[in-house]
Amino acid sequence: LMANKAVLRLRKELQLDLSLRDFFTAQTVAGIATHCGQSDAIAVTTTITPQDPRAQYPLSSAQTRLFAIQSADPANTAYNVVGGMIIEGALDRTALAGAFVDLIARHEILRTRFGTQSGSPYQVVDPAPHAFDLPLLDMSAAPEAEIITLALAGEFAHVFDLSHGPLLRASLGELAKDRWLLVINLHHIVSDGWSVPIMISDLSSYYQARLDKDTAELSPLNIQYRDYACWQ
Image 1 (tube, rainbow, N blue to C red):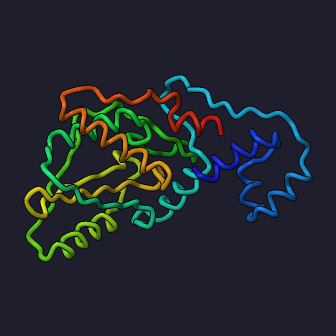
Image 2: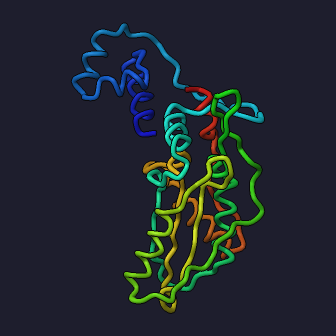
Image 3: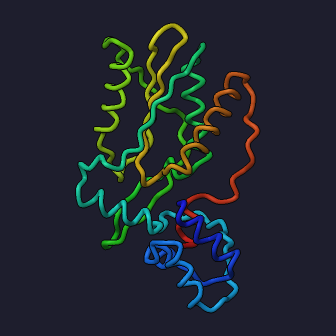
């Protein structure tokens, strides 16, 4: 996604016909500069428009690569994006599970699964869920560092089935009174280092809104990832 953002900005700022393949082929800033010098400046559009709802959508180039890798080795766990965070203070598990429901409803990519038809991969956006499974972790091991290590290791070893969603998992454990461990696991095909902080911020907003029995004040999303995949 960061590479795609860079390409979009170069197209907009320099008015160049630069593709994602050109970007990776260049490999260096000097290489991109050379390509820019050789390309004719033309006006290009960077507007991504929302797609009409349909049963299936194409994959982006990054998703296509990850889907091929996972399909070749279905037991591969190298693309699990696992994170753990310590939460201090009282925590409402029901409200947190509800916040995940709201998050998945907002970000379609978190309720997307993948398949193939006639040898070509596609993605399907499932309806927004009404509940989210937030299991409690086994806190019997000690000390705390060992508990955290075991919890993270379990998610790093989890095998995602891309044909069955959700490709997002979370679990919760009470390390001590008012001290919690939240573990989140997503497959890289639906997330990356740029999108995860946004999702965590949205999750926090939804959790606070659930506690306040209110509605989170988040701006509507003009496009979803499927729109980008179709545009690309």
